Image (cartoon, rainbow, N blue to C red):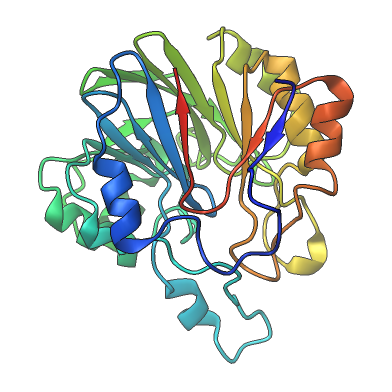
Length: 292
């Protein structure tokens, strides 16, 4: 299968594929041994489930940005309804934040999530430790910090930090990266979530060092200065990066959440994947995908 879009007719959908109780029920379904099931939660957020572990990657599950920017010259108008309230997500083993922007480190998402998952492990860029603790009102010593080229074993998984350029590879005074992607390894599976990034020399090689890459989760909203926010890969970039790292499958993200900062997968991402033979899958918010 060279590529696939959801069997739903593609529209600018305002209603998620699954939401609220239906999504919660889907998440609790058993995952076969050796398989991986994931759900796109909107923006750059994913829930990954193995048979015995559940990981949330960069969840944004609130309207904090819509409320913050209401009535300003940069309104964050939602395109897709919220898939689920974070307090309904229990049994989470690990949550990640790739950087400090609110759609990747949201207090209104993470505070209730941490409250109902008291034993959760929290993975962040080490450079952001003080900021994370202050925003969430947690102890600085709590999270597990990574940097470009460092790794940690967490709850039976491996997490490897990969520098991200958003728009530059910015570092703190100690030289540690403020923006990261993560390579996640569990059993036979290797997953790369890029966080927010542009292409930069050597990125594909960094990730390909962990080959085979089974799944790449990459943004496609692009880099347009008139939006007045840091940019990302566009659809062509994402397709070409996935192929360069040898990804078995690429799933796009970072679109269809806010009207001012989105992209249509049909414009660049899907044609680019099909032109170069890169396997892909486009999901609707709240839609599950089983890989086995």
